Image 1: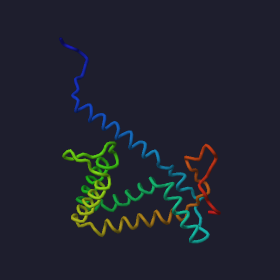
Image 2: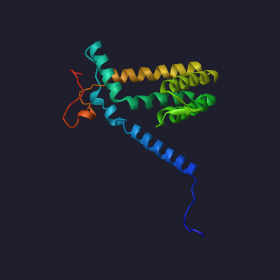
Image 3: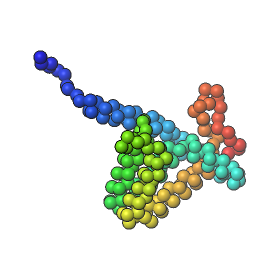
Image 4: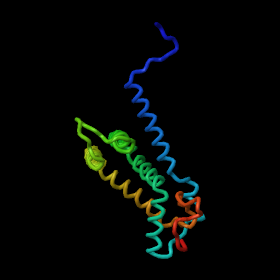
Length: 183
C-alpha cells in the first residue's frame, strides 16, 4: 500500500532533530539571561566607588548580574584578536563547538564505551585540549593579551557601574533589590 504525502524519517534523524531542537532551546534560554546592553551601559550609573571595599562589592554584584554580557564581551575581544591568526581562529571555533556540544548543551551524562564520564573530567579534558591546541597555533601571546585586556575591561566596568538600580530577578515580585550601600 502506498502512502502519499508522508515523509519517512528514520529514528536516527528524529533524535538528531530532537537534539538540535533541545540545543536551540537551551541556547535561547541561556542568552535570555543576558541583561539589556542599555542597562549595562547606562551612563547615569557610572561613577567612582567610595573605597576599595565598595569597589569589590560592586565587582562581585555586577559580575553576577551581568555575567552573560561579560562573557560575550570577553569572547568578542578574543575573537577580534584572532582575526589576524586564521588557524587560531579556526581552532577557537572548533573548540567552542566542542565545548557547546560536550559540556554546555548536554542533557544526559556523557557515555564512552559504556562508561559514564563525569562533568569534571569533561571540563578538564576540554580545557587541556583547548589550551594545547591554541598554544600549538603560535598565537599564545595574542591569546593571553586579549584575555587580559578583556578581564581589565570587565573589572573596570564592574567597579565603575553602580549597583543601586539592579533588580534581582528572584526577588522582583517582592520588590527586593540587590544589596547596595551608597554605590
